[in-house]
Length: 510
Image 1 (cartoon, rainbow, N blue to C red):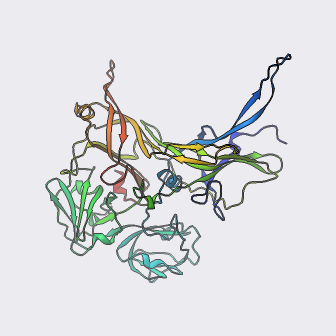
Image 2 (cartoon, one colour):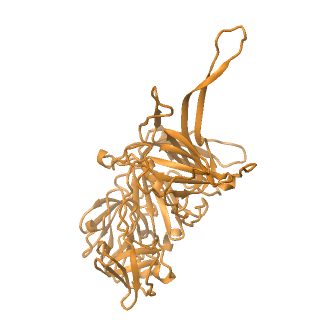
Image 3 (cartoon, rainbow, N blue to C red):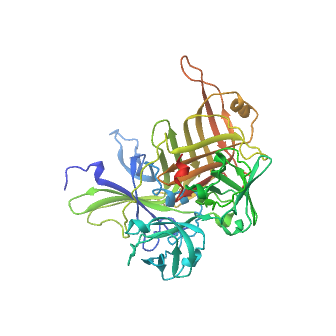
């Protein structure tokens, strides 16, 4: 028996339970790894009530256990890979993915080979989900030349042909995958047309309705090469889709600047897509996920000991952005039960993959845009309410509470409340426009993006009201504007959109 255990000998993983059945792991669970920086309350807290009868001895009798509160919480850095799967539970929704050989909630399509002359990826079937002119991002192959951004020239069920040079690879690793991340337009086909202050993309050959986009989704316009982007500097950047027609794509948000009318000539314009997480308005799309979290606690002399919080639902997620820092995330969980296992019993069965290597996002150079502005249906790029932001917290709350009952130690179920998005921000005061927006209870929107190493995220709060707004004026300091964020259901039908981009051009990092 060891004398003690160090915190660095612990580890944290989670596995999914059967949807709608708290406490029951799915068959053949996968225990996905996490990288906690610190823990809040984690485990089970037992309540004991003592017996205290009136007696000559004036002593209490041994108490009895009356309740168990199981919960958990931890802080972790946000990286490109570590939280996306888990955040489905915070949004109560499935991620809306573009075509991929490794869907998060579907059956994987293993790659069987990479060949040259012609340059192809092969699989038993399923590659015809892609099409000519698709931009795909390949990862996980053993040979570096076979990974990265590729342009599809032809697609069949078992063969995907690309224009880039590949290296023969007989048996790609199981982790190798192909993701559709965009489209390359034909030469001179995609143009920018401004209708007043509303931006649109127009085309002759490309049918925008075939791209798998939905209203409220964000895209990135423009590739790294001059031949794949518009000449106008403000015609490259993030944009939100508001109307999708065969040859017209209307954009109601272009935070990188006001776009200008431009007809391409020989340019093959690139459009990049992401995967979307949002709170779904329709009951058929609301998914009530629960999890078991495993915290290993070091070797007890026999094997690794562990503890589990069971029937866990994500109650809150807070994204923390502070000046000159890394972006961190706090998650809190409401659970129904708690279990501890000795090394003799061992950890629960299942597959335990290694964590994907990724770096954290910093708040200095990786936040590529942040924009708070009053909604204007006639303008894709209204004037922002501030230029610089000092700090921001954005919180998802599901208002989960445990359900207790006689005869049950712990909770037999949980109740889920209103999906709420709140938070606060402190901006550098420039003019009274933001204060006026608070006083007028204006319809405001907020979006910001994180881009690093050719991938990233975009967060969009489509409609919110602002609170506070009392200026902080201190001697020898910049005037600060504290604001409270209270989001509401928008015309899009949701409160928060989170875009996950598996690939973005280097241009997006500027």
